[in-house]
Length: 396
Image (cartoon, rainbow, N blue to C red):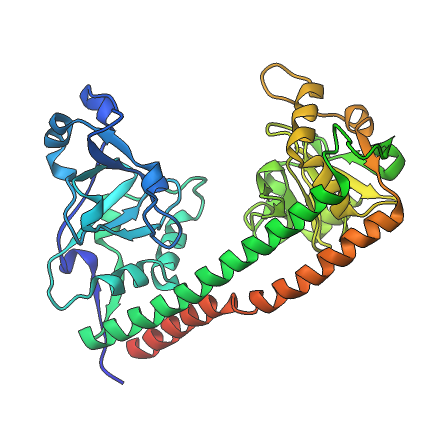
């Protein structure tokens, strides 16, 4: 194996800087003009989303000379969604950036840009950020932090080999993700075909109160949980912010010990429960995938009695027209809020069991197809493991 050196980014760059907000200089955004790029202009793989681009005047662009972009610049997000990486191409230019993005302009000709993009998104670099994040609620990186990022730098041929391998993997994953999305859309379309709008109820199904179909409980009062109760690596709490796109997305930093979990056994979530946010965005809910979670203070636990599935309840509550109904029912002027009496009174359409069975037989067939597609997901993790192992051995 070749001898792999490690370098700091500052050793291979011509420039590391960041942008600013035009309004701080007295300029406003425009409908047309020079492209102004923010984090949201790039997807998780660094793909350019042109529809998200803002615009500034030529005068403002000249004023912001320090952050004028060049072809081949690497953009690295240093606030908010930390670690999102993209390479600037001609189609984006002329362009400028805000203060949440750093420009990394490579000067070393022995550096292959796609390799730098790859390594900046790998665990090798991410672990360096995680160490900085300890004890910090919201991590923001400074330009000094970026300069000090340490990366392995093999020969240029090896850089090209690794980057091309990774590109192939990203291509496979992107294709599979599109297939998954299409299958999800198919299930949603079938739901509407068979059950209709749950508010207007075009098929005239019986409506019953949610309390007839499920047991409902609010999460523990704030006085039952204190700052010192939270640990790393325990039982995750599920608050509204941990429900994303109809799925559970826990924070492994917001967890409690086994002892506290048992003390709050009345609020333990079980596999197949529905957890729903009761504050802020109405209709945010998800089916709990496994045991071990605790219903958070800002959430509610909905446990079906068996006449309908948890998935059915989740789909009804998160249906656009139903979410609007919930918004109208919520109390509180500053922030919409739900309580047990309100949720208990939700009017839920109750189709005959044979209709529900036909829908779930269809969904099961589609989900089998999804399983075949999802088997490719671990490839990304395998490549990252390969990188980590390769460079770990190279450092010895």
